[in-house]
Length: 404
Ligand code: PMP
Image 1 (cartoon, protein in one colour):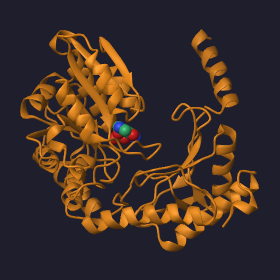
Image 2 (cartoon, helix red, strand yellow):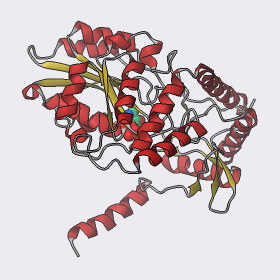
Image 3 (cartoon, helix red, strand yellow):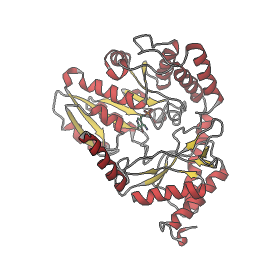
């Protein structure tokens, strides 16, 4: 036996003992029923942990667009974008995304993860690697992966423009600076002060790189994200997003100036050396972006559902973690307990809410993360709040007196 096999066995044991071992929920998703799934016994489960934030993944519009594209172009794209994997649909999607963000151009990658890793990695390797990157302390793993080989990297305090300002001021003269941050942070639901961050980047001549993965589709008049909502999109150099969350589809992208995008197209290994997004996904993505740009009612309903869920929790004595967005986290503060609360919600109440544990969040801040969608009704919200309060009481995290 190779020592690696022994290592795997031992490491798996340690993961299980420490609660880091991952298992999948055996849930079946059926189109049109969202957010209701069924479990292995055919029991109906209400899902509260989907990143299909607007519930569009199962819509007729997206399904029809994907089916039509399969009929027209086949299933696989057949190659990289440069080698027979390009279609007019990919190009139309990129024009649509550029227009959404008010940028001259956009480039589609096979996922949001790949977009971050490839774009950041390529930028930071350019210009002889003469870059110093400044990264928000809570940036997503995909951005961290893209910054891994940066010659110089400094982490600034989460959502702290003054700290960033001081660090940029102290940077070595003559080095190129890039600042990477998100708008909506997916585990806390807080929102970055984009205008201040953008101004500081400008002041120090730093390139700004913004991940709007948890905001696109949901914020701003046309769903272009928090940069649109705050009127700062033109002051952010590179905006990255995904089609896999609010757009209900799949794929990632960056939108920026024409030359930056053209350079990434010809230099980013994570774009060049992989088969392009299947045409059906590009077509469904295009249909979704077009739909979502004018779906102001859906956006308003989504925000209203999130506010209502937070109120419903408070009404049963559960204070959610502070969140300025549609993400509603509830602190448990212990990995085993968090898994237990999640298990009880699923098994005894038919609610699927994933436990978010270390390393996704720091130890001691383990939490449940609720993501309401426009398709969660009033009764489901009340049911979720009551079930959560009951389970928290059952495990000793909520006293009866806490309940209103
Ligand atoms: N950025 C952030 C902030 C994310 O949370 C994620 C994934 N959840 C990604 C990028 C990657 O996006 P995708 O799922 O499209 O790969």
